[in-house]
Length: 103
Image 1: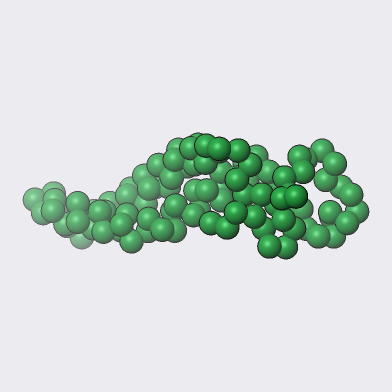
Image 2: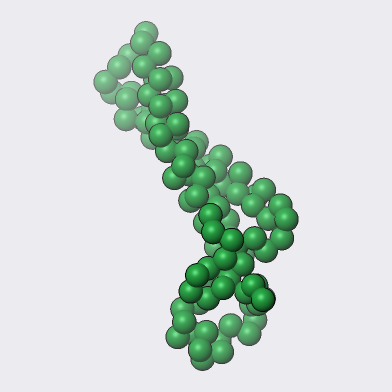
């Protein structure tokens, strides 16, 4: 992840440890993926072949890890900071948001 936005200079590291909460978002996303894979496989395999479930869920989580990692950080920062387009910033409509641009 970049340290700041190339367009507006927004600092993506507002404080040390800011992204610790993103682990909760990541947990929710990986749980959703695991449940979705389980539900998709359920009609095709019976419980006697449980290694298929474990390997399919594990493989899907390993393959989706880079996406989930970035997505959880993006969701976490968007919970606290609102994106303003250049047009909105030019109008001065972001006075109620902290200025986190690198100086």
